[in-house]
Image (cartoon, rainbow, N blue to C red; front, top):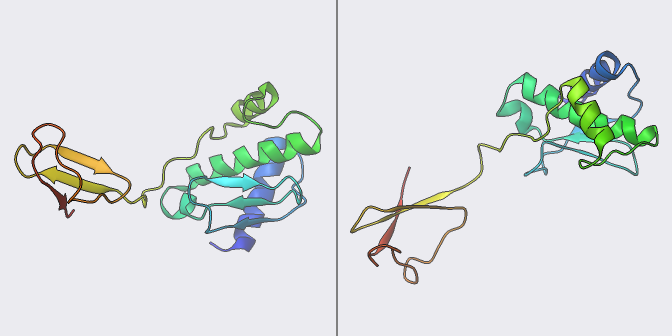
Length: 146
């Protein structure tokens, strides 16, 4: 899917779910890693993580778009638009948007296994195997290849 298609989808969802036009730009931003999308307060543009489409289905993508459109429409109507605000929560529930984007499947994790007791450790970062040992039996750890 290209940015033109995303723009059309956002405009369509805005009209159908919010009964208001989306007059700014929507585009994919591949630099987004930990969030499903972002609403820019200064430019009123919406950026969507392309992984929401490649790793998940269209329902997830539409939920993220509705979430960002809630920020957009509330901000432009001078109402409270932050996640903690009641206006935002009520509108998000009314349009059936996603509160949280699902975690990316591409998050790297490292699995370490104790050579003695087979205790498994899952870490986001690599660890120095010369420095760390098993917390149960103090045995050596090895990196498990999945």
